[in-house]
Length: 193
Image 1 (cartoon, rainbow, N blue to C red):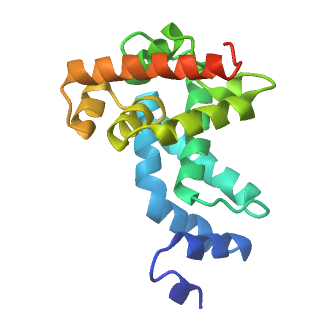
Image 2 (image 1 turned 180 degrees about the vertical axis):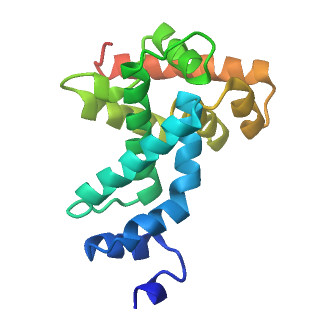
Image 3 (image 1 turned 90 degrees about the vertical axis):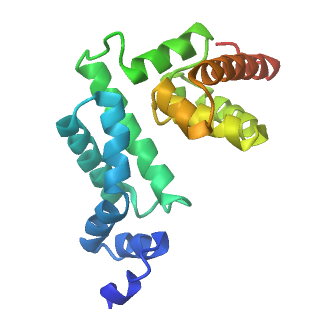
């Protein structure tokens, strides 16, 4: 029965396994999303072993929180959990060193007075997140991809440029303008960071 539900490999089939409390939910989640989650964590941490631990922790979190939660977009939900795990490990290990892709991205955000992680801000994190999401939805696809790949998925500037079809200089300039625009939008919304 479970095997037939998974033939199409859909998110809904995996969620049904979680809700049925089947151990296969973890196996299928790993099969469908594990590689991308490890790549995300590896970009943040620079270590395959640490990335593997973060993905394992993210799967454990999924097991503990699904149900009752039912993510609308399972990969995005898992990526957020795994990213949080990786950032926490980065902070706790005091691994922030100049030159890492994520470190450079966080420093870019800091120079523009944007929060590197909305969850670090007490009180208004939901409101800030909503403004950022609304602003991103207004952006054309190339700009949205550049911003999300650089500041959520921690792609290097070179990788961001490649994914958007821009030169490195053009990508750097675009990201600078976008950070300024977002800072202005947050200020307009009465959010002063």
